[in-house]
Image (tube, rainbow, N blue to C red):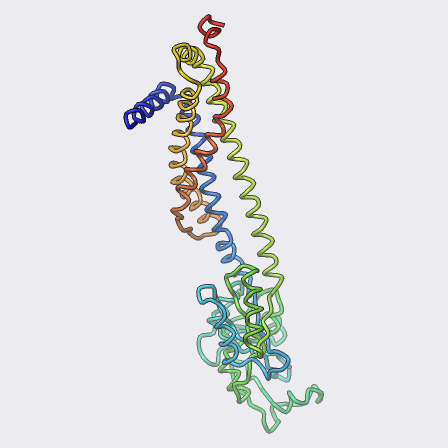
Length: 394
């Protein structure tokens, strides 16, 4: 049995070598098809991760707000809600606390936050200057900077009055700094914020500075989260947190999550379509090459059949040649496919991908299957060769 297998293997390899120019074309087609199959399959499964990382540059995709029955978002209930989200999916968490202050008798909204966290949840923010790194340093939105006529390095004295906040209807020309409870603190403009959005109308400072200005730590008004997860996973988190933490209401930022889902689904559909088209082209190329080989070997096939060779042995030989080409082409495609996918990922998404060992046997099996299917018609023609007609030269 072992001798028969060795002889069979020698026979098909010798046949491939004798017709190496034609078989090289078929092998090249199989290798290219396997490369595209392996590469696009890798991209197909890595696209959600890569695109998710890119979409995180467009801001938070989930927010926490206080539920109707709670007194506000505290550090404790926020951390309780965050406990339901996997650590490896959490990109950043930025809390915000809004208060109204006055600068030169102009009412201004200040937003207390964590600047390190904001750089993770809102990497699209453009700062003219530097991010605040110490107490007493602030970011001023572009609109507010124009309103107050301030520039980098200026010092702004901000006034917070609890009485003024509780009585917002007092005359606009009232000097709130003269209120008994008024707190006046100086701040240095460390940067001018340019986002093209509503953030340009705020002044951003650290939570510690807001606490010093207002005299209490207060609660968060909103917490923004950037989570690297699919829309289904995000919706599961929303449902789980809603059930688990009654004082926190999680919400999805739909303009981000829906856009991400739409782009991913279309991109994955495109990758799948291209893969199918490439496999069909590979099948046509292999079928054409094998058909030419059968035509070229008609006399040989007729002679073998006249000497008693069965159709089964002829079918086995041609299928063996095709499947050997498929295995070699699939192996080459597995390696080249990873190189192709890596190049696409680096150039398009600016990040690397992970090698998937399971794709090697899958690519080889797919290449053998497609090549075998492509050989069916040529093999059928080979079995229909009439020895008498061929040997007479007809």
